[in-house]
Each structure stands twice: as C-alpha cells, then as structure tokens.
Image (cartoon, rainbow, N blue to C red; front, side, top):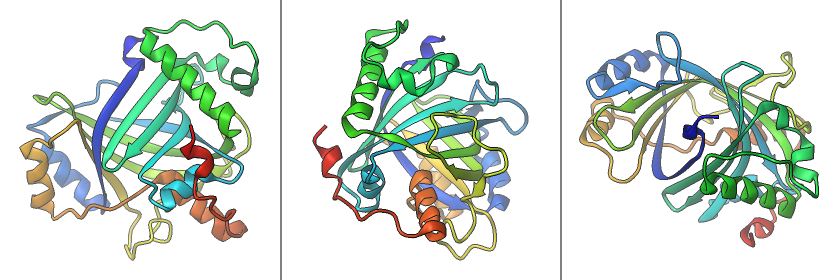
Length: 269
C-alpha cells in the first residue's frame, strides 16, 4: 500500500452539471493550470470509481442530506479502477456548512467482507500512519454504532486533473453515472443491473442530454483561474449527491423510502 492512501482533507467543493459538449472547451481552458491526475490512464485521463454506500436501516444518512442537516456525513467503501486486486478505501466524508472533511483508510481487497466489520476482534492490518489507523477504527465504530448496511453501489468514470502551482486544486468530470441497489458487502455488483443516474429525470433537470458532473475542489480560497473558469462558461452551482439521486430513483421504482428520522441516530456519534 502506498502512503498516498492515507488521506484526511478539509476542503471546499463546488459542483456543476454541464453538457458533454462543454467538456472539451473546459479541458482546453484548464490546460495551462492543470496536469492529469497521476493515477489516470488514457486520453482523456480517466479511471473508474465504484462506491458501496452504507446507511442505517431508516436511511438516516440519506435523509440528513435531503434535509440539509448542517453537520452530516457519509459512510462508504470505494475502489478505483477495474482490477479485482485494487485496494478498498474505507471513507467517512463529513460536511459542516460548506466545508468537507474526508478521512479514509486503505485495506487489501481480499480483506473487504462483512467479517471485517462484524468481528469482535479486528484482523491484523498494517497502516502507513496512526492517522490512517484511527480513520479505520472510526469507520468500524460508526458502522457498528449505526447498524449501517450496504444500500447502493455507485459507479462512474472520472476524468481528473490537479492544479500545477496550487497547494490543492482539483478538477474532475464524472460521466456514465450508474447505480444498483444492493444488500451485499460486495464491490463488483451485477453487470446486468446497472441503472443510469445521469438522465434529465435523475438529475431533476430539463436537459436534452446526460449531464456531466463537473467538480472544483480546493482547500480554502479558490485560485483565480477557477474563478475565471466559472465566469467564462457561466457555470451555475448545483447540488448533486450521487447516493441521494440513486435512493430517490429507487423510491420511484419501488415506493417511497422510509420516513425521515431527522437523522437523530447519526447526530449522536
């Protein structure tokens, strides 16, 4: 495992849903300021992301997002790429007002199963730092405390760039967004059950196209070139939670999700 896998960030994110026709223009605009993410491949520089979203039996984490609870978080397990040997990242993504804090720990793919959560004695693992180990233990604690279980698999293709001269500036384009409901602690999914979440219905927009999710991420103040980018293309910021979109669509297919519990069981962590 590489030391890069242990991450804790406090950052700001801005999301925009754009037409696929704008992507080449924005890609050209950011070229002087950005380099492709070193973990991407191809041209454009991309990788696939698969995320297993965990939630309480009453979907409190979903309802916390829908109710815009000021202090909320997500629990998820994530892989990057399509290799079955790729490691799994256990992530807690917290949001307080406009600030995002993400902590995560990396474990070998063969260790990812429900036993790693439910065992009384945790398996022996080696971490790069004490911070990563604490992130792992906090993830396990929250899953057990909330009785969190798998709810949905999310998959998409991400084109990713980092700022050349900035301490932390990141631009990503997410396309081909899909989900499938699941109760399994499995990150592979059923290849025939993927449903689209980038349609105009899913994104609650009247777009005649499948929208691409553009994200601009910084640690504090946005660099001037990001501000110029927003102004140049007249971008309008919008919320876009892939997990919430998936649960919302599933509610249309199967009936409404459980009534919100006002997220009380997740506010006491």
